[in-house]
Length: 365
Image 1 (cartoon, one colour):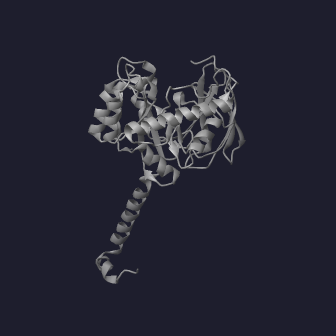
Image 2: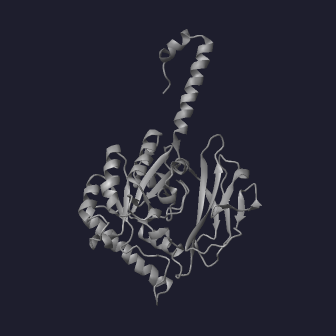
Image 3: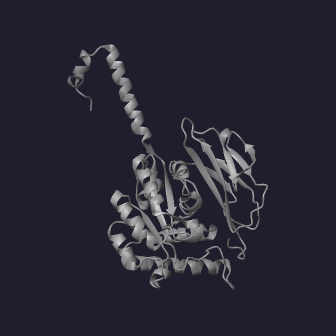
């Protein structure tokens, strides 16, 4: 509908210079509203919020509070995991600096330390639980009553399997097909019990130890599940929703400098990742990557393995296609390569992580 001239009558009284100034202000406001929306988000992962639990997966209640106060005071939008995943899959923009808070395993400190603080800040969060320790009343784990209290308060309760298995390992006498079927049944039984106890069935699985392979991803897709992993990076419109990355923010990663950097990272649009599977029997495997163009300079892409820089072998600079392979061998069960690039014009980074899992079962470091 065309507006009547009376709506704009006051502008006729303004001097031309003021009209130009008002137009510039309007353009600035419109630009600000556009940059406040984004096609990316960050998922964080915690385990213990305690001083007396394994250091590698723990941070103190005081440090956890510091993390949450930073999110509150620095303009982050904390949203539920299901809301963010739905938006990303439907390519619907979210507020810039959106973050999701998740916990794995169902430890007691989630209920006694994290839950009251997050409730007071009105921060939604998700807990991925493995059901066997809860059923057994194992020390250090929440009870089903604790979990129901959180669920009734709006906390999302999701699937972390029954027994927290190494999902890429075949048991003695198993082949890949029987392994996948065994894990399918365990996943569905855990989902069934979570629904019985809480009424929730989110159909989201956090892979124990962050371990998965191509067959497991196919199984999750068959069952209509989203897969959540543990390798680092942001998520975006073009992420792999069968293996979404999360940033660990405990243990050696609990420092505030890392929290500030990781919480505002951006997601590369990955066009190629070869090999796609993280499972390997090579101790320094190569990977070929291709990123879609974005607001970063490809010349500033840097890749690291074990904290050491890797040489980038450019296969096609214009297409942002390259190959990386470290010189050193890795002997642990899991390791990864990280590639980053600063966004043009500010101090935020695009971030990609390639997970590797040794195919042998004799090394579970």
